[in-house]
Image (cartoon, rainbow, N blue to C red; front, side, top):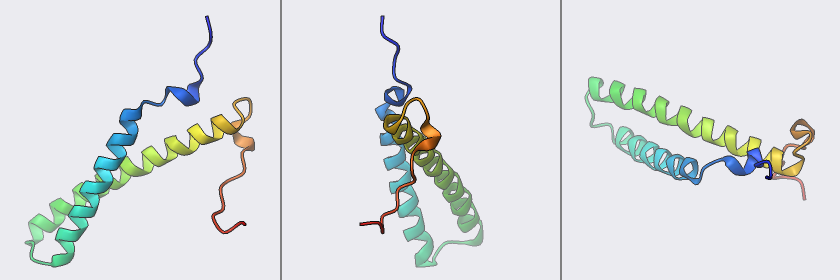
Amino acid sequence: MSTPNPASAVPTANVAEFERSLDELEQLVGKMEKGDMSLDESLQAFERGVSLYRNCQGALEQAELRVRMLMDPNDPASAIPFDPDTP
């Protein structure tokens, strides 16, 4: 019996949840930028936005951990952070 790889154990549902949260957050920001919400609606939208942001941030952290595990499953901390400006 093989031991499951923790990096591959991340369900694809997390990716779908991230995409839904990000889409809802973008729509919420668009509504707020129009400026035609009441103060109460704006506060509720802001609270929802913070919650969505935290969901997205958590999903991104999990994805980063998954990448680190794939790079070196014996020492995930040894992975070098991605720098998009490096050629």
